[in-house]
Image (cartoon, rainbow, N blue to C red; front, top):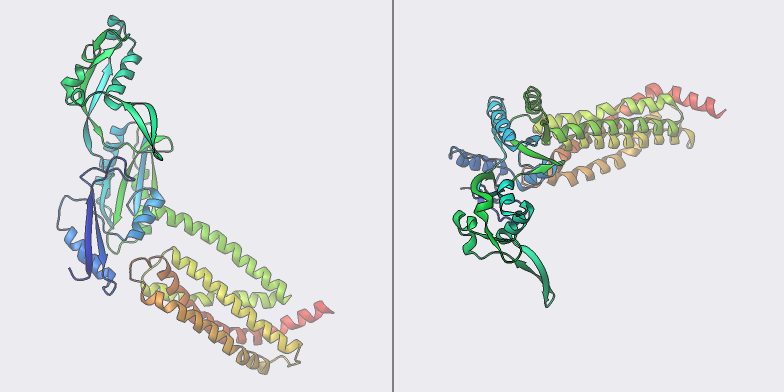
Length: 439
């Protein structure tokens, strides 16, 4: 396939691995050529994967997978976590919910977390039969566990490596159900009682993994987004479906993943940004000693965001990095406005230039070089990130770089054109108010 450099895969995981999955689960690792277009190559991969019906699949970068697992512990863009004590009820609810979510626009491949029923030997000790043989049920359970699962009896050290000494039954005694039933349980060291005489030994299907979260059993429903789907609108639709669920007593559902994390981060960012903007205003007020000048610089800050908003809309990428970039643009615009107005006041107070058009033109001309050089240097540093933003690993900084680069254009125009005009209009009153304060 054009754009693919190499390919590898692993199927299943060992029982002691970091992710315990059965042979029904596989991860296919695809390395994309650095010179290839990531979006085009990813779509080609999706087209190939979609040709295998009946397979739950998701194509994502390594960074996206890591972020999703950190946010929710699952691999979906949106994760619905069902909690409760009855694992069978959780599986039934998850299956019904996944089926209902298939009708939601923008959702691709909703599915419950993979759980495979595997055969397991179950030993149910009968207390009545144990009483007939004069054996304590706990003793039967302990001896059976030692023979089948093993019990650590000690430890010895070989060189620097400690090695456990484990006592358990022979391999033949665990070969099949009949052999397990014929296990001899030592009562007092002399009398052996057959395990099948005091317990029911059967093979039952059990889930290969039972995950827990917050001390309760949990089962996740993983949701992937269709290409081009809006995460916020899909999250809203999923939340409405989840709120309409009728869950048994003791069971509840929670929405996790990118949508919930983005909403929480956006709310937190807006709160912090509001405090920062209020702080900027008070800093301006303390520096200028004039509410009119402080409001003048402060009122021009939204104009600086125009370039960032246009750049974000043009690129079509809106994420948390976009919001962070807008906050950074506000800081850049406030800094440039403070430097320019402070220079106007320096010319008027220290060099005796009379207030008026000549003062503003001279001050803007003298600050033109530093302002343009700062914007140009910052912009040039962001250009590689903007150009190479469609490669894997740049999912966070690319939207932020696009917004900051667009905001630099509008904030520079604000500083060199809008701020001087506002100062001519409002600066005189600010100067008089300051003189009155000094007198």
